[in-house]
Length: 204
Length: 179
Image (tube, rainbow over all chains, first blue to last red; front, side, top):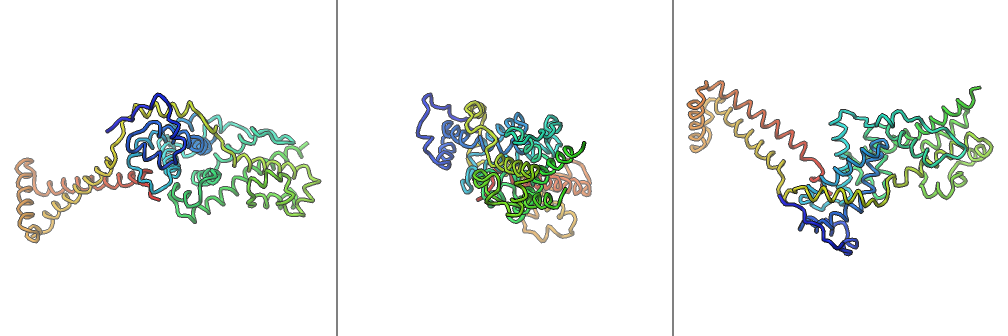
């Protein structure tokens, strides 16, 4: 066992210019904290965003899981063989952490009570961006986990179909089917809310 | 719901328009079918549906978390510094998996030596002697009947195999991901 080297007092500006794999190599060979911190900085937004959507918009839970993801990655980094993109590897850890969490807590639909009780925002003539985002998170949370994961990964712009298949551990064709159904279901949920509103508006 | 509303929803349910096109043309002038577009221009409910669809697609395509969060990075790095890390090339679970499977094979061979008459004779002399010595030692030390020893060894073999299979499943965790 080895402990990570303490970060240098003065931040090394060169780490920002290195590619992911160069940072990984530095973090692997010398437990370079600067290199690892740079990897976290680069990927934290996407990992947290992915988990936020998987967790139905529960930010606190998503951040807890995201920390776990990076710590697991840190521990496993010496064994990362650099055959996959670092980001792909990280997303797969994130998906496994999410699945482990849902299994551990026996909640396959890990939506917080706050999210469950949240009603869709009332419709305005021009939808508010915050309302749309909340409704969207709620709609995503209603999808079955494999569909949810497919649609969340699809909208992370740097993830290809092949990488999605690797991350989810599914054949490519299954991923495409999941994605097609997930997007259709997501829109049905969103448009279904519109139907309810229209019915409410039509009711005297 | 009217037939046109159903047609609009059916189109939106299956449509695949890039977010950049939706951002540039949120009313659907370039991507909505002409008949639906003409009808939607005079139908406030249809316009709301289109607006909501576009807003949801744009929200989906935007990053849901802050782009850079120094506090989060600092917290992760601080926790990582206090965390011991496995040295390169050492995989504890893989090692346990190997040992468990080896134990299962040894126990299975031991059970076979009891169950199959003449099995030790089939094996080489060294193996035969080792098995006989192991059987004798086990009988002396435990004072058990051979049948009970066989069952015990079988149980250990099953247990070891179970542990091995369980670990094999867990070893498929991310660090083994191949490109």
